[in-house]
Length: 158
Image (cartoon, rainbow, N blue to C red; front, side):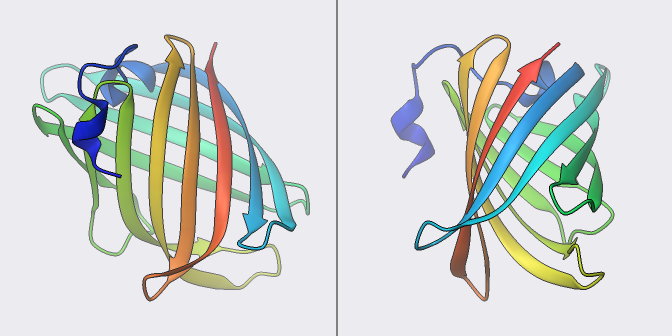
């Protein structure tokens, strides 16, 4: 998909607006053949530094096996429709692009697992605004450019 295909769609998804305040979320992760791998609840809180167009977002995933993963994002708007992001477990930085109701976000992250191991995974996430309080994410995770799992995530602003 090309981000330009979403130009003019509404409601407009802007990370610097949507991720400010408290959010709840839910996730399921499926294998490529459709088997359920894990489920999670998500709590998140973001704050905007309007002077620098930067959102600081902390989100915690609590998985059904009991382990959790907390991400502390710094998301910076570079210009119209262009974003960059940092998080302490990233390899390099995340890059994002926005048009209309969609936001496309890619990054590589060392991701802790329930068994105590950690895997470096490539993420390719598409976020879609449903209204001003909800978005749905379809993300893929893989290694060496080969996806092996799909995540379906829903966020709700509180």
